[in-house]
Amino acid sequence: MIARAGTGPLRRLVVLRHAKSAWPAGVSDHERPLAPRGRRDAPAAGRALAEAGCLPDLALCSTAVRARQTWELAAAQWGTPPAVRFDPRLYGADVPELLEAVHEVPDQVGTLLLVGHNPGLEELVLELAGDSLDDALDDVRTKFPTSATAFLSWRGSTWDLLAPGTALLTGMTVPRGKKPS
Image 1: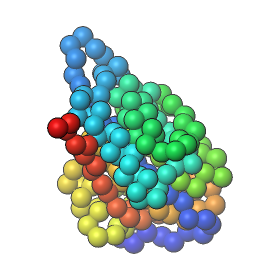
Image 2: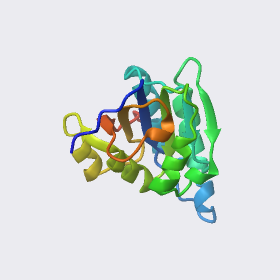
Image 3: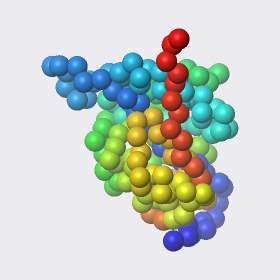
Image 4: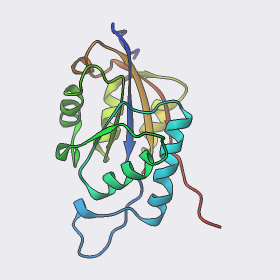
């Protein structure tokens, strides 16, 4: 399937799955923090976004502790982090809920970062992508692990026009931080 060409400015949606989380006893799912590996991988994800020249104008982030910590560690890698909106709807969201949040983004935002959880994020990427460069769609279908970042591009005058099959998946990365030596 080929992504339908839209009209309007080129927009980018960057989808970041939270970094690896811990499972401490007695802590609710929403309050789970990042594991040591997640604390290493989240900054690596931020550096990868900077290296790809894909820094966001706005970030939408789940309110879950692990997603907020991923955002904070990733954004700390940039000179001036963009505005962030912590949206409780993104915790456990499915594709319609994720699209609802994206559709509310102001028109002046050219690049949007969405920080959240699977399976919703993986399903969103697969639903939006009408096509991909290289084997990016196959990579997402195979696995969208923690700290995975998917890069989607599309043309549209407003964010509420983003619809299934209208974006091009330009790549997927899984940045990993190095263990201290």
